[in-house]
Amino acid sequence: MHVHAPPRMACFGLALVALAACGGTATPGAESPSTSTPPSTTDSDATAETGSSSSSTTTQRPTAIEVEDLSPGSDFDRGLGGERTRSMVAADFDNDGLDDMFVGNPGDPSFVVLNTSVPGSASFELLQVLSEGHLSWTAAAADFDNDGDVDLMVGGGGNECQELDQLWQNQLVETGSVSFVEVREAMGLTRSDFLDRMATTGVRWADFDNDGWLDLYVAHNASPRCGHMPPDTAQNQLWRNVGGERFENVTESSGMAAAPVGSTRHPSVFDYDDDGDLDIFDSNLQGKNVFLHNLHAETGELTFGSLDPVLLDGADQGPLRAFASCTADFDNDGFEDLLVLNRAASECSVAPDPDATGGYGLLHAVFRNTGAGSFENVTAAAGLDVQVAGDANGVMGCQVGDLNGDGAVDVFVGNGGPDAAGANDLYLGATSGIAFDDESALIRQQGAFRTHGSVIADIDGDWVPELVVGNGGPAVTDDVNEPNRILSFRWLHDASYLQVRLAGDGVHVNRDAIGAKVELVFEGSDGATRSLFRTVKGGSCFSADNGRALHFGLGHSAESQPDDIPVRIDVRWPDGTTSQHPVVSEPGASQGMAIAYPG
Image (tube, rainbow, N blue to C red; front, side, top):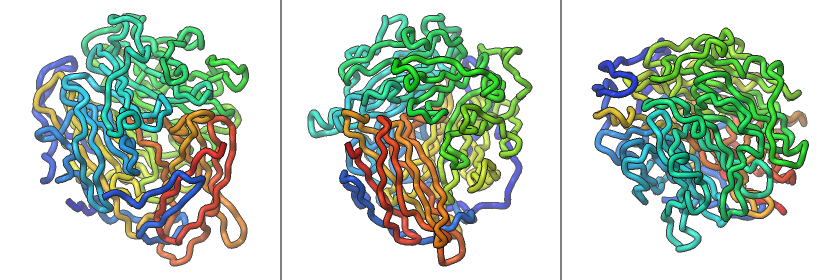
């Protein structure tokens, strides 16, 4: 299905039959869905291959002319009429160079599909149904045992109710065939049957102590629809990876237990002060947001402290109902900025804390990292002071990445509520500073749904990212399955990209290279340089994981000659090792590049 972009339209919401916040039924009001492997990259120090797209590489923004949904006929959706998707993960589970997908559907089958797409056409094959009826709310993939295949963590419960989490270990290396076995208890991710039944709203993989093994941060909802959680199960938890053999709960010893319980929604992990260790931002629906400053670089110990609220410029106070957070270097200055997205309608058992309003009201917020250990609220200047109100408005799903190839990071916001579909938003980032243009009309022709976990990933193997949108209603209602989408953007001048995949050695650096910082350096004919920055993450935004591939838009315009060209990639690995890699690019062509840890 090709959809040509109409003139820009105002925000709208599509109301459904009323549904009580904690249960009931609804009649969907959304429209029904319309009815080979890529060239390989190697594990050598740095290799590149070019694709067939064409454009020049200036930083002028292109004009979108159409959006194509690649999902019809792809077997991406398995359920009749769609899914109830909450979590979406892109990961190369079978090591064939294409990102496969995990789709978590609370109350319905949650499954892994293998990617068999070819450029321009998406296709999938069912690998394994991991669970039927499990409240699979959030997920992130990583090779936690450093054996060379990608495993999967699934957080249960979320906004629905208490549920056990799941840790799925990939058996590809052990057996030669990709399949998953559940190993949560065997790996020590357990306290007791009662305390293990939590309402998990976020899981993030990160090597917080830089020992080469990925640790696990698990965020919890204190007030799911089925009632308040006991305090011992509402506390967010940090699990340290002990040599890939087991996990130990270090929530107390790391000082994390001192943080207030705030009913966290979809936290962010990023190195805010660029000191080489990863910090945590908890976006809390209830109470103040919490910033956890990793002191490993300062002390050599895995401990967390707090930041002076003055340094946060209000990020601890708002938005009023923070429902998700994302981080990215929006202004490409080498420091990741913070995006906190708001939810208009409160969850069924959560009342706003009057001490946490901070004057924000129902607005999204973006905080610029100053690079001096502090943040600056630039929401209004960035054009993201968006007022959200009503059941169908405010974030559920969200994601960040470069969708138009100009090098700037864009923002996708998926809206809706349990009893109402909502029109989604798309904000295209500026190539200078932090500013966004509302181009939501490009994606609204796909229909209004209840959007949740969504990823920006290269689905068809052409090194150009697509936007994969997960939709669906809650597990407590019937007949709310909705179609998931794979949106491929076409621009007036084709966007070209450099796709970069890093690989750690599994000893000094985790296999996924999560936490690595990558700088792409451009040089003009006059010798002037500029840079784009990306960071490898172990989960991001609302219940999603974009996978390990980093996408750098190379810029484009109607002119035939580029203003500058990419010449070098600089990598700072999680253990502090640095490496440089030349980029040999063909003007106007997209390409992939694999870089292995040099140690």
